Image (cartoon, rainbow, N blue to C red):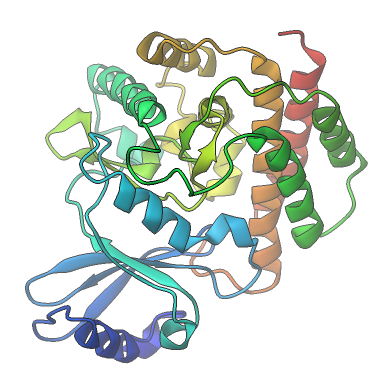
Length: 342
């Protein structure tokens, strides 16, 4: 496989940089695209004896905070040895002259990725139940990490995180929207008017669901690694829980571009998953409907960002043409959540 077959990845330049950085390359350096366009571009990079995962931002249509590979590298480096399962970090390159954008390299983790309903069909109902329990346990463990103790005290400003999220995703909408949406404006205004006081701060993943984990090959009830940390931050843990639950909406299939495992009716309902998290973590889901509305707002903007990149011809791979159809569905769900009492 030649370097010219990969948009956003020149294997010749990468090989030179890795060699200069002290990474030993054994034989020909090759790569396969794992995913591209919806989020960061992700490649399996390998030689005759080693295998790594490289991530870099898309080639166009960026929403800056949504493609911050340096952020995810710093978080996962800090989480080494905490009990939260993450891949071993190798390097962060912020020199854009190498590949045209910053990139990260981490050790490849062997295991099972359950991305689609076809993947999920390989698991029994007992496997799925054990997996959901493990997923909420891992998320609770992440939220319980003392971020000061792992060197992330200066990583960001956890206070006021929710207010900044409301403002951030509204600003992102302005960057990527393909048309005006009065309903989106109403949702944004409703969120801005009802921001609750933040009672707790923790590390948040920002994009947590089954396909952003690697499961143990022989035990679906054990997470081998949590991946895709590009939206991680110090913030309100309930934003993670709400987003995990909102991803259960079947319309999320349009965002993924395929029948997503996380939307399957074989999984517990969003309400049950939220209850399992409460039992696992001991946290009460206060102001829950606000957090659900915020999660729908965020997903609407993310879906519109995918639509924007698709229209700009900046996506790599298939399944991007329907993402824009999900945007009004997420907006409507957010407005419904705001109308409900907690």
